[in-house]
Image 1 (cartoon, rainbow, N blue to C red):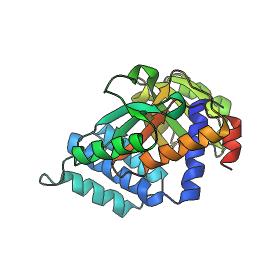
Image 2: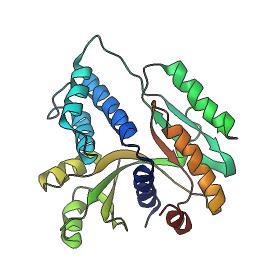
Image 3: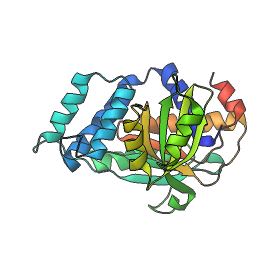
Image 4: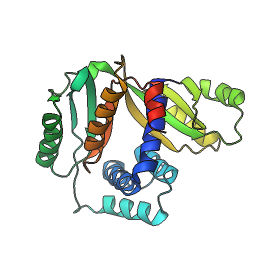
Length: 248
């Protein structure tokens, strides 16, 4: 199983263990609101909103919540958001790239910097580590009764670079940044609704740590993800089988 598939699986396990659904909903709400402000409230003409709604459904978010987030985005006098990113190193040489959505940039900078400082990390300058991550599309699709061979043939034309059936019973589909939209459209044509579809920053190289060191890094990543302003955290730590088992 590739690194991003393992990380997706670990995140799903962590989510189940930590009962983080309310935080997940909060982050999706924010994404929907920003998408509406950026491209309007009609998902047919707003790909970012269409994707955010799809992810909301994948997380079983109630329709009322989705509608409220859309209405919040339509409010011209409502909260405005910016989307800063942060890059830095955690202990043991692990690079991290953090994507945020915030209505108070000073608060977000202070909170992110505090996590780095309190956990022996170093916050770098913007752009200093971006070369360590490739921007790719990653779709997570429940296998259900899908025939893997036929499915793969359908997706190759839409730009699938990798199709993997993970141990958790989900297909993990990887595309280039440029083919992300085409893949989303292809899955829609096939009547397949992903549990999640997102642009990720996958590491060009990973570093293998001991189990104790890996768990230490996961705890710091949890601290970042617990911040309401943080949408996604990407890292260069190798997800070993030992770590996967430790999360069972």
